[in-house]
Image (cartoon, rainbow, N blue to C red; front, side, top):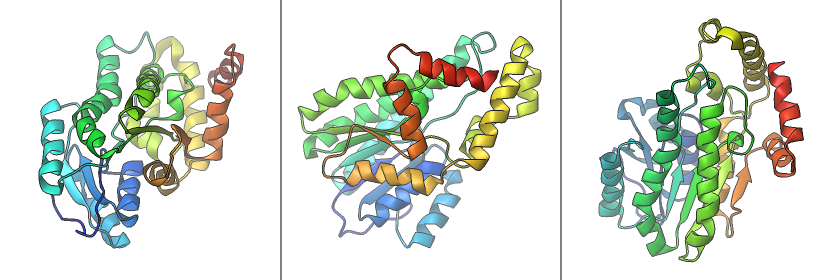
Length: 287
């Protein structure tokens, strides 16, 4: 159930998943500041303190609700509750997801399925439940993917596979959705401050010690990636600005990156017809 109500003067309603921290939290606050009635959802309502604090500091109100993207019953209850209480749903921002570090020999197939369940099927669960309501109002379906949805990255096979799947699904859906008045967009962040270590739950020494013959490559990858996240990452507010653009622009692009670095990185792949540019770059990360 909702923890607070939003201003009755705001007519459009957006539901956002994964708002306990990071881009989801920042996007929820930004959407509310832009005048949207914002339904901020998270798997564990007990982790909403940071969200409430950010909303209070910004002087906005959020409708905070429980939603577990991998639980179809939870998804249906949340979407039905929004319609019952607000009367409409104009936009969905799929943001919930989870990082994962591993490689083919060391991951189990069950590990990979879990990554796909959260990052791909969770997006489908929410999108499918919301879509009739978006279609009714000519709404927007926005999904936060990753530069890892365009460029495959070492030790991120499962995560990138899930994000590739999301990008392929949404790119294929976009023209079909447009035929019934729904706009589809994906937002591709690069490194966002603190996100890598926190979301993956990384214990670098333990991971490397357990990596067997892949230890040298994993050591090189972890050192390079942690350094990038600690020194070159953008803030969650900067990343959320691209999400807000997809939500509010008159004619949002299908694909939006959140930084110049993300544009350059994904552009390398989109112009790399034979794959040599990507593999030449990412191969250096594990050398």
